[in-house]
Length: 321
Image (cartoon, rainbow, N blue to C red; front, side, top):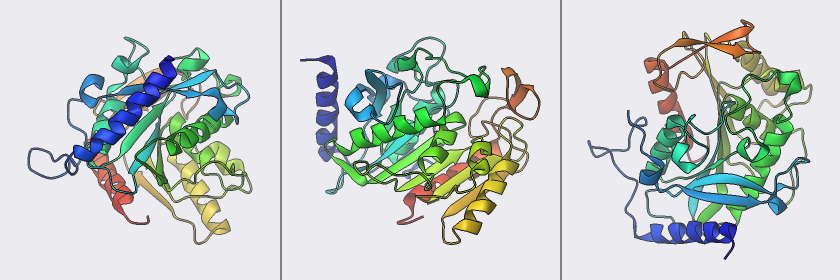
């Protein structure tokens, strides 16, 4: 059996086996976890499955690889009769992996922590790798924006392919597909929920979307940018890599065009890029964009992290955001 078919079979078996599981996994106090645990579980502990999304699903991308590698994590909950909701999670410009590798065992701690938190809430999670199949597994952060060949259009195509693939999996509710992205991946979310662009007829709609500290300049500059799905955007007030004021301007422009649109924006004062993590604040060099050319401030903010996860939980749990 080809490797891709074996991977799909494994995903199917994992989804079907969930029928025997209990309700969402509680934490030590008996409730759902408010935030990811301090120590992110390993990929093996999460039961990560490596899958290959065939080129046939990638028809929107001119540079489509033969397959798009992705990582699937089944929910730690009994699957409803209608199927499990799914989060398609989009990595930032550093890619999905730690420096130690380029496979499921090397998934970054941020992504493993979020996967644990989401699966406890009943979600399946899939992480498409937009960089590895195109020869850049450890990212494009140091590339100038104008020189990047993996741009917003490419990542939007990857999202559409992942959505089509997800919709065909057993035990999945294709009506409840959530997009969640960080930084460059959050910009990809903005591309995907741009309602001024035609939506492929064979692709399920986005139920709701979440963007952590995206660069909003490109969307802000589009005179007809509007939303095709509810959007929660979370930004740091002190972010000097992807400044929040562009996102505030984007929200104002969208709501002027679409007064009934669900576009919620939370800016956490004093927080920097990556505020939802636990790493200490530091200066990162080699960054060709942002307010301070060549350097950006990154790192976690405990208060902003707690507030952001409370907002994220409410956004996901609402019948309609």
